[in-house]
Length: 215
Image (cartoon, rainbow, N blue to C red):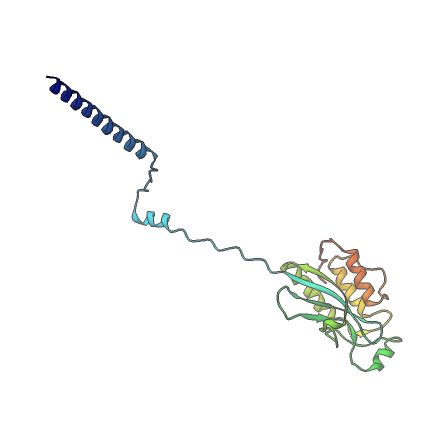
């Protein structure tokens, strides 16, 4: 009888342990299932689902083009020479504008200290060579501003037929362009080109370009 009683108690203990194990297993499974995120699937037509799945990337906005006018001075056999570079930022090609006697002969240059002499308004020897550069002041422009300024430069080139050392000289030529752009300019066009460009830069630090009315 004692043996049967002991066996009965053992069986009851095993049954209770098995019940606890099964209950714990269900509890763990249930708790784990609650922690799993549920993914919602959109309903609708296949075309709508495909449209949601594939979203074409928007192209990056194109950077606006920038332009410039560079007021420059270089060495020369006499006082030096003032001129400008202008063009588009990032392009190697530049346009050059500057007022000087029409030939490389010294005779028109000498006569030009007395009377006006025929002029040229494009590049001259040394304008593209950085080793001769003595001063520079670059102003950046938007495309709309550049369109107006570049047109005015062409206008100045087309309407400047003579050169004179005292009155219609290279400094006066680029000074007119600077004033058209709304820049403050030095008070005299008889300054050496290097000094004039350096003063122009000092006078206009932080100054915003204000384009004048078209000629």
